[in-house]
Length: 403
Image 1 (cartoon, rainbow, N blue to C red):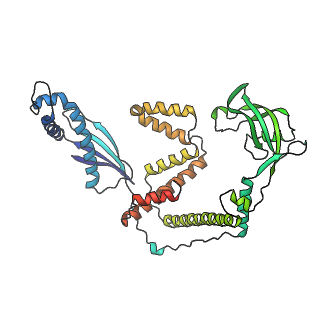
Image 2 (cartoon, rainbow, N blue to C red):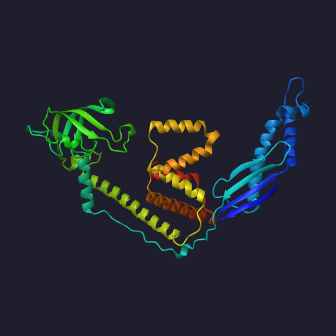
Image 3 (cartoon, helix red, strand yellow):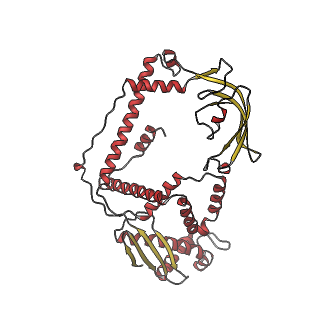
């Protein structure tokens, strides 16, 4: 095996690797010799198949197997001999091979950056401790009662107003055609809750029981159903009933709705929940402070491939594919993946951030680089200190977070 370094730029390394035809032929012969005793062919006793026939029948498949193993083994050896630590999976491209001739391939790899050890004795942290007071408990009780309030029909024949709950039947259409999810009967809608499309609830204010009207709205763009995004819609609507909310009295009976004995027990439960939330917020603040301190002054180069992948992950989280058309396209791309994978990846990269502004792109790039840098820092801390996370610790962490 002959290895020549062709590129050395920052963290990027590229090598030209040559495996002689003699080495390949020797390995093919050895592999065929291993297979021959195990083969059973018509006209021959088990294990007595001539090597020449074995090579004729199985030579090409064995050659493919040998080539794949030779490329993988020689790539790993090239990295190990030079003490290189890849940051991501190396890229391998066969540049030249014909049967009976040398095999040549290129090995491109991004390396882990050199990271100076962290002196944790220089780091000082302060954890905030917060205790929920009576006002926070009372606010939590009030919010809880709002979530469980009931309603009753209005006592007078007045028109609907903000805060009322109207019971409506409606049927929506776009360009005269009904659409999925656009109709319902007996639906209860609180006016001012902003549960429906903007403008819908406003047109139901000032209406009386039995009123019928055409509610005209425009779907937002973007919208959860892309086929409706930005389009005008008409909802044939009837006000069946007008109800008004009834406050829930906060007492022992209210506490029993949650399986507790009395109001004091409910307050204790809320206090415990608030303490847990405050502790989590404090822990999150402590973690952010620690990560800021760890990153401070660490200006090592971030592997471009790792940053690109994290950037793509952020873009997908911001603008995930959601349409049936996108899913169909994804399925088509999966079917053609083996033929034009690189082209698909290039097109996907364009599609991921094409709707973002340049300012957003720069911001997400910074976030991606920070995440990768901190991930590498923590990984190096774990490596230098021989820290290993057991399966039991992973399960415990997942359980504590409700997964």
